[in-house]
Image (cartoon, rainbow, N blue to C red; front, top):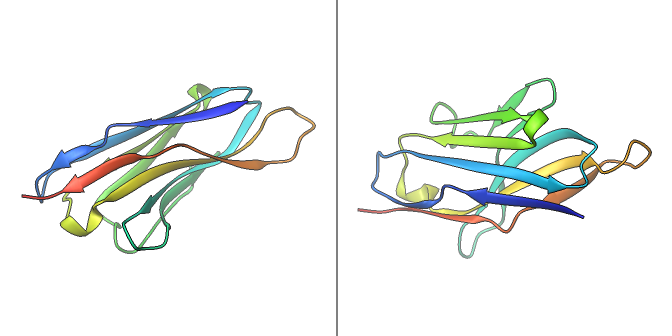
Amino acid sequence: QVRLEESGGGLVQPGGSLRLSCVGSGRIFSINAMAWYRQAPGKQRELVANINSSGRTSYADSVKGRFTISRDFAKNRVYLQMNSLKPEDTAVYLCNAALRTYYYTATADYWGQGTQVTVSS
């Protein structure tokens, strides 16, 4: 059983900052990559940023230069530093991990429950 738990969401004014954290627990042998997605009401889930075990990162165009993803895979953690937040960043932010539970298993995707981020004055 693998569990991903997000924290750090909340209400922030436009131009403000938040730092999201996600920690994995349970049976985790190795992590290939972790990512942050978001889903706003009435919209499809979109990839915000991801980072692999080598530290390579990628970002959605809408957050480039404002958001930074980082990781500590030894501790099964991933972070998302969000600066210069805009109202359109309002969404539920979900943590995703591509990981193996045993050395002999294939990589599979796991999801957290999400944390709400609201950007409003």
